[in-house]
Length: 127
Image (cartoon, rainbow, N blue to C red; front, side):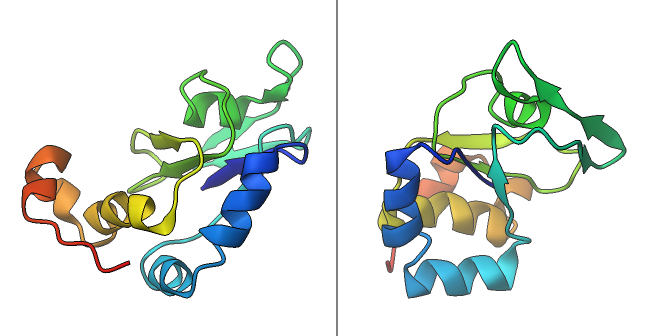
């Protein structure tokens, strides 16, 4: 889930440089259900069986508050292994080579077998 806002400059840079990268596009489309979510959306949104609405106190949708663990920074990429799993937020602008390890950790199912530091010991990036 790409959590962004319309006013976020770094969100636009990440859209162009990272989410516009052919290797990133190909990998995400092959291994994930990609979602772009405006954190300030006033629409009600369902995730699993739970409904989230706009939260004026945070100037954000409660889904964004949940996904970002209350740390409202943009852009944030959130990885979920299922709608009921805990979100894994990756805050800030990430270049393709920085996004590659966590994408592959989840996309290849390594999160089921080992923790991320262990995964990184044998990881060799190609982006």
